[in-house]
Length: 122
Image 1 (cartoon, rainbow, N blue to C red):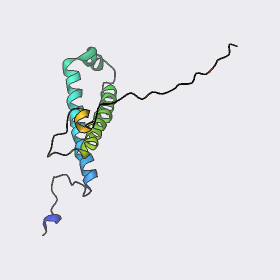
Image 2: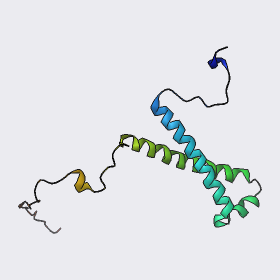
Image 3: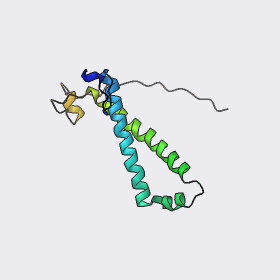
Image 4: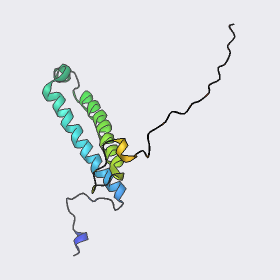
């Protein structure tokens, strides 16, 4: 029996590195959304916990809030992972733009003649 024939409880990640990156960060975003949802109800922000517990069907508002948080926070985490793809981990990027693009000499003003348009009052 091969190792691949065994059914394991592990999540099979895609072979494509981009899809793997998106899946892992999407799951991290879902976990963060769960933490935020629990924190909102634990802290009773805006008296939300009391309102949900006293509603006729408390599942609907919790599911709606959870879906909104999963979409928002999952996309934030996935987007930040994609934006950080170009960063090089070996060297720290310069913090100032002047260090990235050093000027050869001091900038000098360039005189520009501006022609005014004559407006007629209507």
